[in-house]
Amino acid sequence: MSDQIEDQAAGLRRMVNPEPVRVIAVTGGKGGVGKTNISVNLGVAMAEMGRRVMLLDADLGLANIDVMLGLHPEFDLSHVMRGERRLEEILVTGPHGMKVVPGASGVQKMAELSTAQHVGLINAFSELANDVDVLLIDTAAGISDQVVSFSRAAQEVVVVVCDEPASITDAYAIIKLLNREHGVSRFRVLANMVRTVQEGRDLYNKMCRVTDRYLDAMLSYMGSIPYDEQLRKAVKAQRPVVDGFPRSKAAQAFKNLAKKADTWPLPTGVSGDLQFFVERLIQFSSQYGESAR
Image (cartoon, rainbow, N blue to C red; front, side):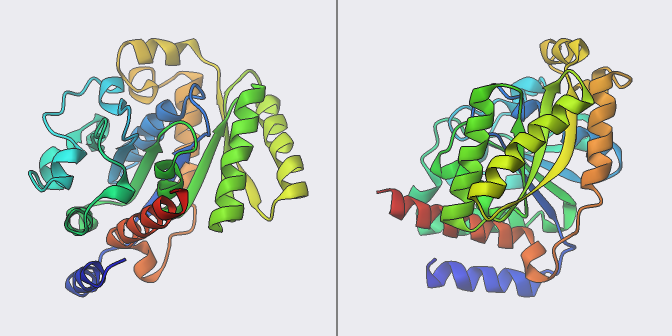
């Protein structure tokens, strides 16, 4: 990271002393596991609890959180990166006051941003540092440099898995990559679309048997989301199930998961600052971009 970025970041930390922000990356290794649905509903459930939630659509190739929530943003993250808008100007408000950062479909890779764009991104997030309790990051499908960078920079990595061989294989692949190549040692496993509570536990145990044998990683079971037709209806209606069908089994599961996530330890010191997260994101993006060439 350049001296200019480091000087800018140091200045920002001297100017503000925000409360720690819980930064959670939601990933899955493949598409179709319900990752975005989980990000949206977990965010809404935490906002309903009174937490100030910001949901970042980090799928820079196929952003779709705004579609899922029936929102119509005029601007997105690419306008912030180009210096045309401030972050607060592109935010759209979802249910229960949750703030959504619209993704920038087709934007250039994070590793290819200029120094000025890096500084602008750090500035943008640090301006809102005092207004956020939880930053949820909905990563893209697959194992791209962007997925790795966002996951590595976050404090918590939630890996979504469902009962399909491809899902289990790809979930293990992202855990293996983050663990062996990037030093991430803790992961939280969330089983989605399960028919029974035991099915979720069985999926977690399958993951543990493989990771315990081959990786130096610690997995913990976050819980499960049941298969629920009400959730499908909510998706069609462009509403989170937590808001549209609050008494459904899926909604109750999301609310329980939100309460659990709210008890996770908060970071201490500068590692809990939002601008520190963005600095790490930029640093890791640059490193990964160099090594991938």
